[in-house]
Length: 266
Image (cartoon, rainbow, N blue to C red; front, side, top):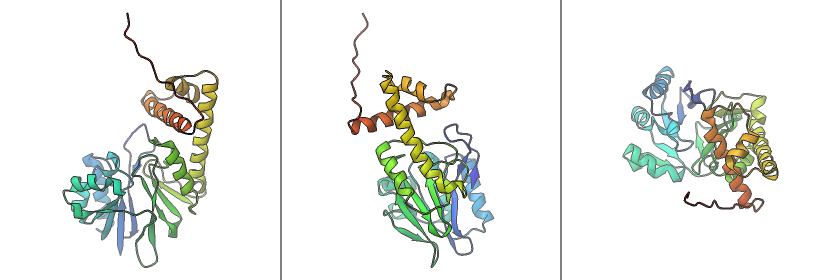
């Protein structure tokens, strides 16, 4: 279920997924943002499918544009919600019922029928509670915000994120189904995750080269490695990504951080 939400941070709109056989049972991946129109689009799609039995609502992570319609959609389909353990208590409060939220286990397999299942893959980095879902029968990877369809994503912990990308590349997939941007089919879908991993490695090299040329601030490094015509609305995200690269390099002992010194102007 695609919606053009117009967010500059993830061009190409956003997606929620119904996975399974509408004649048997399905799961829903994510429930969109808080806007009434977004929730209505998901519920309308549910009715178009013939009101299939929904076993679970699966959440990729706790950001508001992935859980915003949760209470209204859960009221409609009446099934439990499954999410990363770190997110369970928050979603229990949203629904007002602990029994309706069931924490996932890493590498757990959620059956869709007797021969088809979704594998749960914990993929921290974009957020600590991020989860991808792998549909081996269709060689499809539902990547949430770990890998987007038309841009790179924001990252909270780059070390964890790159390990997660490396993990995803070990799964045989031809199609990437992201939360934002277009679905990426074969043959490009096969290589998209590796491309994102290579992109991050290239960014890290650019950050190091900027430091070697004398850049000392996040904003200066950003101005050197991002396009000069970067949309102003994307500058905070770009600088956050630069900072995540610097954090990783500091943790690895490859870069030294010197604290800022403040004094009152005379």
